[in-house]
Image (cartoon, rainbow, N blue to C red; front, side):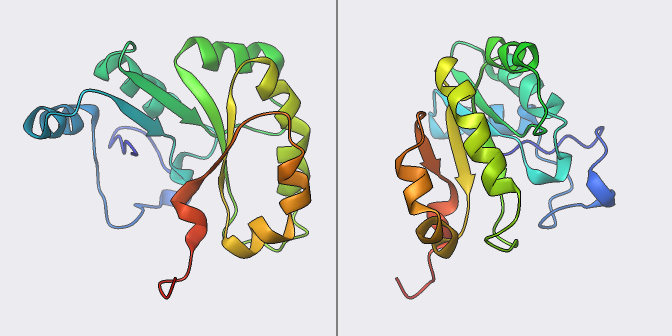
Length: 158
């Protein structure tokens, strides 16, 4: 799930899917009503590589019951990755459903994978099914766990 903190700026002023905010407090009320005990907070693309909302949510929802997935810059340092992991982040997300298959982000994901594996983290891909098929050889040989986000954006007919 995503947290949309109304106090944090979003890339390009985007409000994203009409949601003005969805705070940790909102989710705490929802999980109490539904009896949900654990959560995975995924940094939404609207914050780019600013993972504060996700890291704050992990703490607010309980670091013993909540994990996160971050969005990072291609030049992230090992120290920054370690700090994210220590903050409850267990994966890194690449959101690319609207880019060409030759976009450099695919190479970035491949380059980051060994570093994620060394930290016990996964690579979360918000890719289309066509992108997944195009890059299947790459995906099958990555040294870290791969999570397909949004079910690979399968067509409604499937």
